[in-house]
Picture 1 (cartoon, chains in turn purple, orange):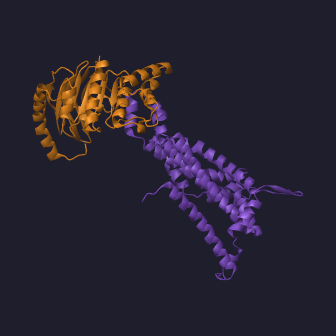
Picture 2 (tube, helix red, strand yellow):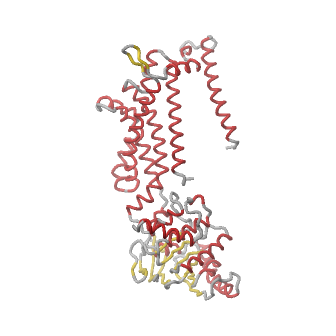
Picture 3 (tube, rainbow over the protein chains, first blue to last red):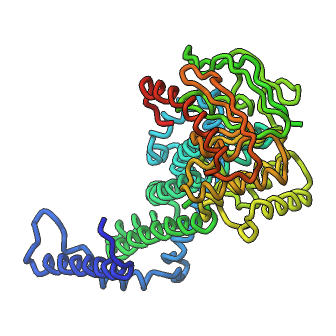
Length: 268
Length: 256
C-alpha cells in the first residue's frame, strides 16, 4: 500500500462518511420526488439522514407518559452492553482455561476438540429456542456467551500452541518446573492471542445480542428497540438504532485494541 | 566444579545417526569451542549437555553426576537470544532465581550485579524489542549467569550479530567469563572466534558427527587476533576443517 501522512488519511475518512450521508440523502429524495422510485419497493419510507438525526436526538432518554414508560436509546444501549459484558465475562472465564488446557494437553485436546469443533459451528442464533424455552432467565446473556466463547477458546489454543519452543527450553534450563513453564512462559506468550480472541468474540457477541433481543423480546435492549420501532413504522428511530449498534461495535473494537497496546507493550 | 564428560555419546533421530561415539571433556574452568561444518551435530551436543535431549547411547556427566533430565546446573545462551519478550531486562535476568524460589530481595541483588557486570545499567526496565542484538545477548548471558551455573552452554551466541558487534561481544564475553569463572562450551562456525576465545578447540566432522581433532590454544589473553601464534593455530584448524566442509557441502545443503 502506498503511504501518506495520517492527517490526509483522516480527512479522507471524514469525506467518505460525509459522502455516504449525502448519497443516502440524495437517494431518499430521488425516491420521494418520484425520479427514482421502483414500484416494488417502498424507498420513500426510508428516513433521510436529518430525520434520522432528529429521531435519534428525540429518543435518547427514557421518559414517562402517564402510567407508561418509554425507554430511551441510552438505556437500551446500557441494557445491551450489560448483557454483552456479562456474557463476555463468563465466556472469558470459561474459554481461557479451556483453551489453555486443550492447547497444552494432548489428552484434553483429544477429549474436547471434537465437541468444540461441532458446537462452534452452530451459530448463536440457532441457540435462541433453547434460550427462550429452557433457560428461565438470562437467555440473551447465554446467546452472547455462545458467540464469545468459541473465538476465545480457539485463539487461546492457537496462542498456547505457537509458544516459541526455545523459550520453553530456556525456562527449563533456568530451573522452571512444568507448572511454572505453563504459568510463566506459555500463558504470557498467549496473551496477545487471548486478547485477539476476546476482541473477535465481543464483536460476534455484540451482533448476537441484538439478534437475541429481537427474538427473546426483552423490554429493553437495542435489538428490541429496532424491532419495536420497525413494528410501529417509526423507521427514523429504527435506523438511528442501527447506526448506534454499528458505532458502539466500532468503539468496543477500538477500546480493546487500545487496551492491548497499553498492556501488551512488548508485542511489537 | 563444572567438569563435563561425554562418554561414547551417540544420538539417532528416526534412524539417522547424528552423533557417533563422541568422547571429550570440558575441564573445570575451561573454555572449549566446538567447531564443525553445518549439520555436524554441534547443537545436538549442547542440547544433550543441557539435558534438553538425551543420548541414544553413551553417558554424559557433570561433576560426576549423570545427566538424565534437564540439567539445571547449566546456563544456556541461545543464538536467537530466546529472551522472554513480556519481561523487562531485569525480569528476564531474575527468571532463574524467581522459579527456584529464592526470596525476592535476593533476586534484586543478583539482577543488579549481573546487569552491572554485562554493562546494561540504565536499561533495566527496557523490553527486549527495544534493544539491539548485542544488548539482547548481554541479557542472555546475564540471565544464564544469574542462575549460578557450573557450566555455560552457548549456541552460536553471536551468530546473528554484525562483524564489529561480534568482535566487541567476544571481548565482553571473555571479560565477564574472567570475572565469573565457570566452564564454558561454545558452539561456533567461525574459526577466528574459536581461536580468539577458546582454551581448546574441538573440530568435528559431519554425517555422522564425530570428534575429528583437538587443538590447544595456549595463547595468553587478551589475545591479538592477527598475532603470529593465533594465525598458526587458525591455519591448522582451517586445514583440518577444510576437508570436512567440502565433504559436508557435497552431501548436504541445509539451512544451518
